[in-house]
Length: 268
Ligand code: NAP
Picture (cartoon, rainbow, N blue to C red):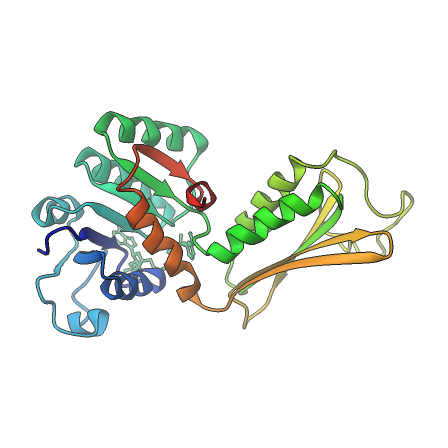
């Protein structure tokens, strides 16, 4: 154990996001990887996951035991909606700060974890999107809507994604709606020759979801005004894009009490 480093346990360590997180934690001088948890680990060579020998990192399927044994400061969770809730409960109970990218919790659950974190005097973070560029894209779109209220969103994701539109598109629409009165866009008498051509409707804003192999996660927000358009676009080309946000989250949760929902709340 190294003095003054933030001790991190990664849950879902052999998944796609978990592997990236393991690498990102190992590469950051202020963080120390102390544990890797997954549902099954026997089929994963330690060296394949870490890139070198275990070197004191605990590998286990038992989260509570590992959090205790490693005296962890932070638990990063990239698992499944069904698993993540129990993991957050266990971490908070043991005074370990949760940093969670898995989605699927209710506002009531978030409010409850916020109170539990405050009671324990620890910070926590749940971020539906850890890509800092995506957070900025949403923030810039919210600003632009004040001056250019006619807006449509096109989001593009890999074809294994189950939900549409994406959580990021919904969050963008919600933020824009704070700046813009609900109104109908397009021609009042427009008709769809093919149903769905004009996309989903959120307070008059149209949202279109593209699902194709080859994409990771992409979104463009298009504003139209007199004689001009403005397009704000973000592309997550691979899962590394989420890692600066995860690393930032691990450091920030050490500095406040209560659970923050959304990485945007940690940006200056
Ligand atoms: P994945 O590749 O399927 O990885 C999930 C990992 O969790 C797998 O290794 C899985 O093991 C493990 N797991 C399942 N149940 C577990 C349990 N009970 N205890 C411990 N580990 C368990 O999925 P992914 O692509 O990494 O995505 C993980 C989550 O992150 C998803 O919810 C995804 O939507 C989310 N995500 C968030 C962001 C963001 O920016 N917030 C970005 C990308 C993805 P098995 O394979 O053995 O079941």
